Image (cartoon, rainbow, N blue to C red; front, side):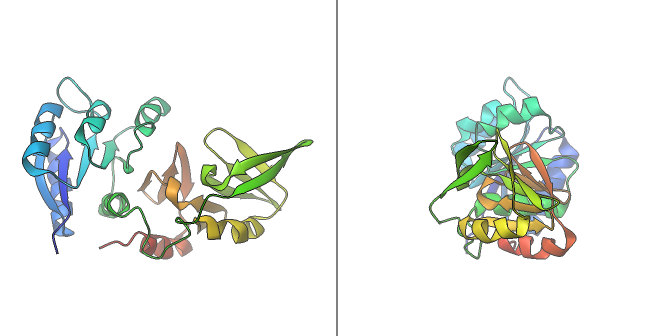
Length: 232
């Protein structure tokens, strides 16, 4: 079986070497380590990797966010910053992952696996068609598509539903909402949180990041969640 091949674009040598060593140890093939966009594009021509890990701040005339769409392959952003301005620039490119420094080996491999295998090992309804749901807001009943929901959060005997731009309060417990959303591709990752698997941007330091939101992974849910990622 051919090893997945990965290009590392990182201008800090120690971090670049650490990433390469970790990837190699976990069964991946690192085709090249480069520190600027021009060299990254040349490496793409020479090696045709399956995935790129891109530091947002790199040497040269273009940063990682400007470089990413020129590669033509899935990419995972790597950065020391998870600020709104950087995220707004990054998320429009639909990265396959987003790793925040400092990161652990588990974070790195989880994000690489998520990028290479977006469909979980055990199909969790990600293949199901999005469903139109209805929520109350004051005197209105509003529609929201299930694939627009990022996550649900428990709040006493109520729950909040979050989309990229809205937050709805639902007069049901998270448990009752879970029964409706799990068949539509949602996973319980904490006693207070239910997430949309397809909306995951990255996993880091025990948290899942979804379009600017940070959701904690509960210890009792961690194993089942990591198993969904089909980690090597």
